[in-house]
Image (cartoon, rainbow, N blue to C red; front, side, top):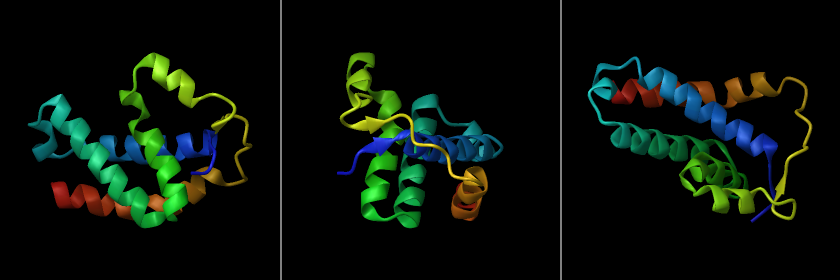
Length: 114
């Protein structure tokens, strides 16, 4: 496993947030409990990330998608400098790259739910 970094976190947050915003507009999602919603978002995030990344990159990004479930003490360990680089500069046009990379797959996933 490669060292994770702040760009992996940003990528995971992008996918998760876009799915959450889109799914919240669907009638089907609206009727589900919070744990069911979280499970669907985790599942769809994983599918999208695996589809659009190399296995090594997907593993790092997927870890960040589910890191919110870790207890605080465990999460702190995953952010230690030997396993996580918090200072990777964002490349120019990073947000556009995320949009180009993920938005079509996110749109498809949301359409398939609704």
